[in-house]
Image (cartoon, rainbow, N blue to C red):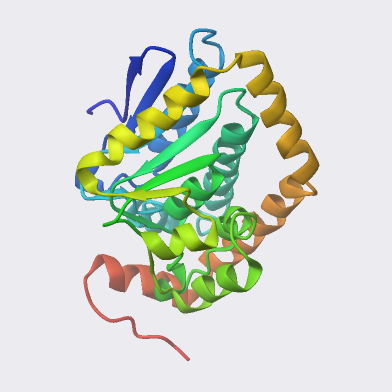
Length: 262
């Protein structure tokens, strides 16, 4: 298998690139593990003062791997234990981003859906191409994006987050910037340059000060986030056990309209 996360350092900036473009960089169990491991390695690297998370291909990240999730239904418990492990692992990885001493910047070149938007929302900063789009569209396949909602609702106003969640509609990069999900919108050719320049600007400051500031910033904001993820994972597991969700995902994978029961 191709290395799922590619790392390239430029001075004090580590660039981590999601490298499964043929699968739209979905957050499979393997991708989550690979990104978590890469972040752990960066965390221990004293030479690194800022991190950029980028992606190859048309999509930044298309959320969880629905084929992998659907296959888990063959387990004796109908997949519940596997679903819980997936959502817990994903929450752990997202949480690591905000506990990392280095600021983390999402460089979004294309579409970010569901847990892909969650990844953007979990990063400390985000730079997006004008071509980027953001959505939490699990409702389209009968799976309300409860865990992505934890990060999203902490990054944008509550009503805007809920509208995205209940309609499945995508928003443009400009709208994402207006809501606070994205810091800067630029043209595609300047995207990497813009993200790396922001990272370099941050890396020029004393790392102890930035680390202390980042830690304090999230400490004063973090009121029950871990508990929120725990409850949201339970909701997602219950959702995955529904027949309509099984049908919705199957229809998506088979490129047809779902035959909802209701």
